[in-house]
Image (tube, rainbow over all chains, first blue to last red; front, side):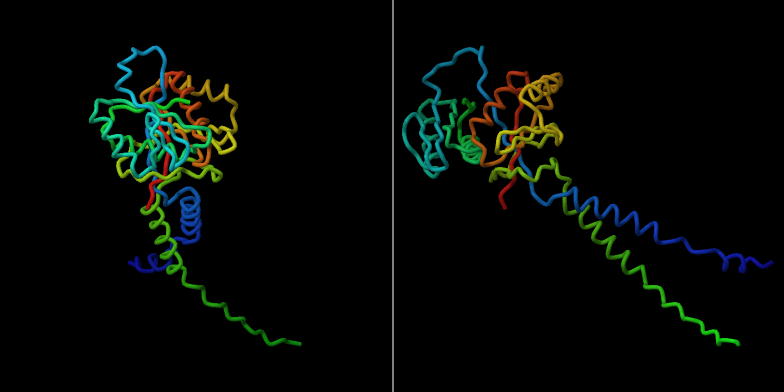
Length: 128
Length: 133
């Protein structure tokens, strides 16, 4: 019996197609992927037709820029904003309406929304 | 006349195994360390958010560029087309919509889109941000 001879003649599997595919996968993942960490902020717009609640429970937040925020007319910076909001909620305010001015950017809106989310306010709606 | 036949020696084949090892290593690194980009618009720079907890990033996305143009799945769309897409999505309102807006875009323009989506029946509207390091 000469089995060993047959074994010796068997050709090795070609590596080239394997390398081709692996390179292809590598290039795909390099182009399609990112190392950024994403997150999302929920935005609720005002909707008509709802029951009108008690107006004394609503605060108006106007945003002009990152350092010019008015809460019920009081000018605040980003630093004093959270403590002011928490003070208001202690005095019976439960909801807020957020109105950005023309100069406010999406980044300013996100900053303010994050602060209001961490505050004790129950809900914040944005209006134009 | 008989020329002397000289055999040109074959250069030894480079060792491919080492190359494959490295390429596999890089491939696995990208697979493990990165996530697939949820949208593909290099013009849009996302707003930063510092909040460690966040709502989940959905898969239905509308891209809003700084100049006010709107894109759905990479294609430029008009206001009316966006509105009709919102109406289609509203058939399954639980999934909501995620807006991908440039950070320097006016906030009022974003709110106009949010209001549009709400009017179409999508109550769950989120804005995609990137986490600050």
